[in-house]
Amino acid sequence: MEVKIDVWIILFIAATAQGMFLTLMLFQRAKGRQLVLASLMLLFTVTIAYYVTFWTGISQHISRHFQIILTFIWLFGPLFYGYARSEVQHKLPKSLWVHLLPFLLVNMAVYLVPLFNVSFRYYGLFTSIGSFHVLGYALGTYWMLRKSKVSKSLLLTSFSFLGYAICLISYYVLSWTGVLQLTHDYLVSIGMTVFIYLIGYRGFKNPNLINSKQPNKYQKSLLSHQSLLDIMKKVDALLIDEKLFLDGELKLSSISQKTGFSSHDISQAINVIKGHGFSDYVNKMRVDQAVLLMNSSAYEKEKLIAIAFESGFNNKTSFLNAFKKHTGRTPSEFRKSIYSQAS
Image (cartoon, rainbow, N blue to C red; front, side):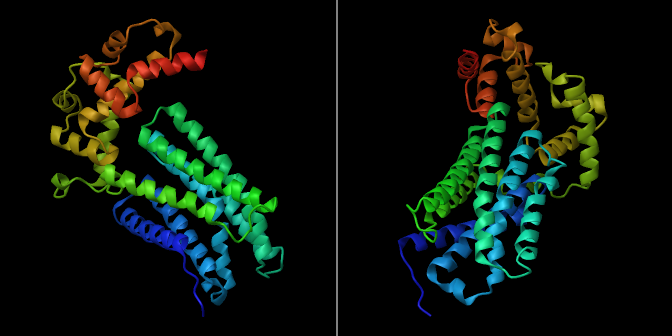
């Protein structure tokens, strides 16, 4: 058996290796919404690996039933949307399973329509249609994240996924027009490779992306996960429902006195459940409040420092730092973007 190897294939083999490494790290350390990202990484990695077997000629010697990998395209969009949505809402959307139904229906059609004769042309048809499915999710997710004012890092990841979707559509359009041979699908893999390397970069810059375990200082804690959830529920009732975060002098000890829980237990609950320290968690709420006020016509001519104080910040520096951290832009830049959109 002659195996074909070139520079592109070596690049994609490297991407497969990194994708598998990131997948293992995510599945080993992540939980909750990050498991969705881990699943997406696994599917991307397996898909590129299958492409490599196709280019090298190895696929001719393995079962044709492995072509089911080509229908993973119907999972890419829903999984990335689910991950992005959970990053905004801090929990997985309950309706995520509904978005996975097209994948099941496509595979039923692939197997049942040709009476269990697994034909490559059926996979080609459904993957072509699936490219528009991916593009729809990519555009919708990117638009959702732009409106939610998320961090630049997450927005860049979404932009990368959108780039992959465009590569996918371009590949099929160029193939249909005869400009590109159907077997030369390097364009698709380039988009997937960029996405994988970007996730790796995000993991390097933000270790919490691939490590959501409890911090070491809480490893010996006797509190169960359910106990932490109960504590967090009461803390949120104070911070969100009673808007205690608007108090510029708010301290962890104040929350402790009002809830009856120790400061240590509250700190652990916020770190483990929300993935933030106390100050960072409260400042995120204040930034969200500032964004809300800045989008309000009633505060259109209000000075930024006044909005900062009304949102719970007690000084300009903490406002600027927190706003830039959670939105990726300064308050002035954010306000200018509002004006430009209005005009």
